[in-house]
Every structure is written in C-alpha cells, then in structure tokens.
Image (cartoon, rainbow, N blue to C red; front, side, top):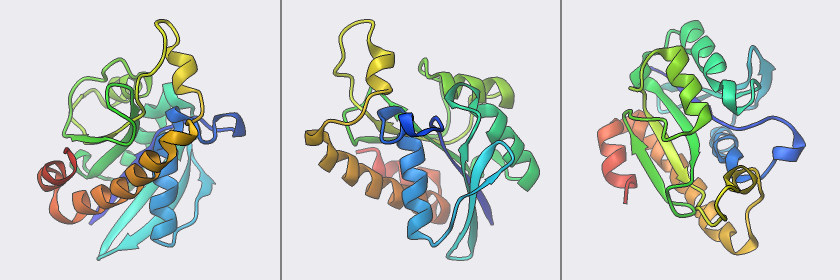
Length: 186
C-alpha cells in the first residue's frame, strides 16, 4: 500500500524554522524516524520510507508554498496514489500552537498552498493535517507572522506537536483517517 505525505513550506534557509514551514519540519521528522533520506527530484525533495508493510513517498515541494499543487499532482500521478492515501501537512493560524486538526477535505481557509492544490486537483476532498501556529499578530501582519520564527516559549508545544503529527501520520496509514481524526483532533 502506497501513501503520499506532502509537507508544505518554502525552500531556502530564510524560511527554515518558520511557522509557514511546519509542514517541512513534520515531513523531516517523519523521514528521520523511518530511516529515509530526502533527495532532490521533480518539483520536490522526495524521500521513500517503509513502515509496517506500507511505502511512504514523502515530499517537500520546491515550487514554493503558493504553487504546492504542482508538486503534489505530479507525485500523485507518477506513483498512482489514490487521494484517500494522500496527506497534506500544513500550518494553520486558526489553531493554537502545536494543536492538530485532521480533515478529509474542506475549504482552503484562505491558505494559498491549499488553494493551489484544490485548483490543480479540482477538488477540496483530500486529507490534510493542519498544525496550529497560533494567531498572535496585529491586523494586517499575518504574512510577517507566518513567515516569522517560533518564540522560545512556543518550542515545547511545537516539539510535542511534531511528535504527535508523526503518530497521526502512522495512525492515518495503519488505521485510517476516521480513527486518526478521533485520536488526534483533541
């Protein structure tokens, strides 16, 4: 059984460890845990991992956040992965730092990466794991906030959220989305 895990973010050192790149951070942690390595490939850094008889293609798009759909669609088509076996990892300002929310589909919520995915897949119905980055920013400063780095007092919640995200991905692959949503949407 094959799965595609897509961590969204922006490439380049100026974006490392920013809120907007939490999808990359979760993808990195998952691949490290499962003994994979990322290599530059078509439209993404890609790692292949195996766990409990399942194959995971984990991508970090090199298309930048706002064109994430290009990489996602390419890898879905190339590996012939059904949408129900795709999981998109993305930052979410509507959730407190480190809080997780899994969904089977729904609106982009204004997130440009998700908007592009929906445009290219022609559907809002694909699983996603939203990772809370908080919303402690003044009006009109959302872009600065999500492109900013974590505060030191947020790091324990971020680290805990990353570990829980890995568990949620494993649960999604082994027990299904419904069970993962029940366990991790607390």
